[in-house]
Image (cartoon, rainbow, N blue to C red; front, side):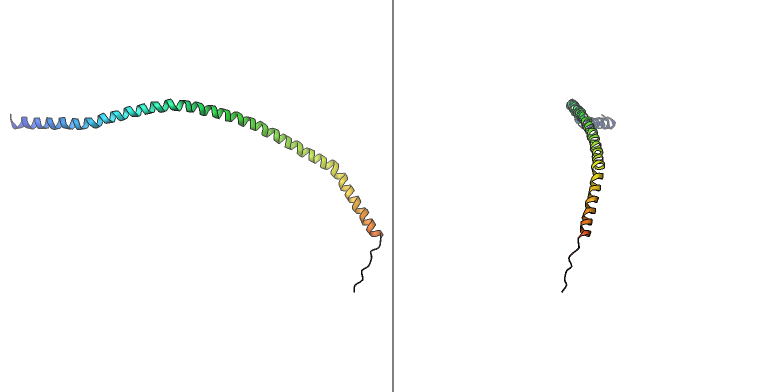
Length: 123
């Protein structure tokens, strides 16, 4: 065997060791990819029912909001009706009450003006 043959054998051995050292992390990386794929499948299987439940909950919330909107509009109508009723009552009863109050104030003033006031002695 010549020196070139020995150098070739050494180079081939070093190359084989290098390939073996690189193969170990590649195998581990392949396992990581397999585990990642399995985890993604498990997550997608678990997320589907949750998304279905979330969709049902949102649908129910939207129905309740529609009911609340109806109730709110009815309350707004009732408030408007009460406001109109109060205005009507104030216009109907308020006018005569104001006239009655003015009349009674006038009568009181007339009675006070009609009788003399007693004078106080200072002293």
